[in-house]
Amino acid sequence: MVKERVDLYFFLYIFGYIKKAAIISGKCGFSLLAL
Image (cartoon, rainbow, N blue to C red; front, side, top):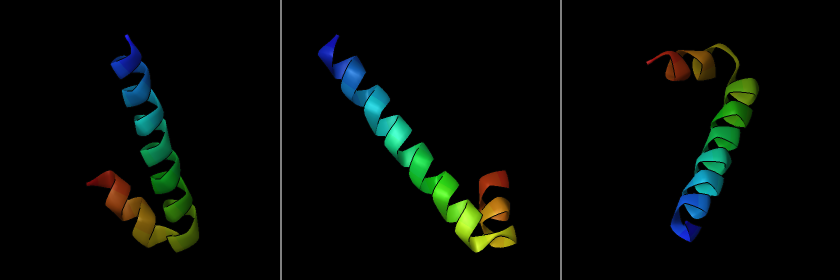
């Protein structure tokens, strides 16, 4: 149960990082997310 919680936070951290990178790089970031 603890491991699942850690995985969830890790996923949210990675998702937030990708989202921020996409906003910063604009179309390039959007293209990366589309892959």
